Length: 302
Ligand code: AG3
Image (tube, rainbow, N blue to C red):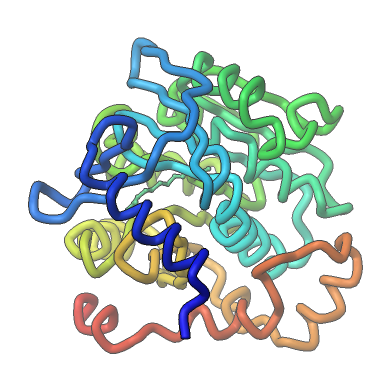
């Protein structure tokens, strides 16, 4: 028996979806498959030199950031993406002092990076200062103070120019980009990965977001083919991020050091004791399992 108040709220919601006013509609996967989120309140709407920026509230996801009409992050599911894109490379490496974040306007990656006591400096290079300020003001839970941490350095610049010109060397580069459309497109090129390799220490690791393979399979294949000419060890690991519809998202991993992938669960279990006990997705077991790809994803990489 369905609780009648639940039934009523479903029926009411169904009626509401017939009125398309006040819905955010994402058409990232083309016109045959859209995602709709009810907007209960608009918190920020603006346009920068690079993109349209929208921050709104939704009763399921909490505050939502969309850039050029594509959902980027939400308060209620961000932990999955930010924990996996940060702790997997940092804990696999085991001795990380300097991290470079490319993109990441909302500050979620920076927040997770700074949890690691070994970090001496976290540099974040974000192209869009307006997006960053809007997130800081309207979604402060995401960065949770990370922007004013003395170990943080925030640079407003194009990520590709930064990696091309920097003399610094990093242990980890985390590319928290948009999809390969608009300002994010250069972050998927051979040039960009080559500059990243130069900016990494010899045993450094670069991780990237590579879309949802079921819907964006070509992005996965292109990234793999481009990077295998540059790095010794190229892989993907997966996490389901609810707001990025279509099942698992692929996170890319590239390094010249073969040992990081083989880090043991015991090493990870010891390393995680140094972190505050507040993970909501990451565990050492999930870390190791996330590199085991379902067959439909393996087939794309054959
Ligand atoms: N950047 C990754 C957004 C990718 C969306 N793609 C998709 N739905 N297939 C997120 C920024 C979070 N800091």
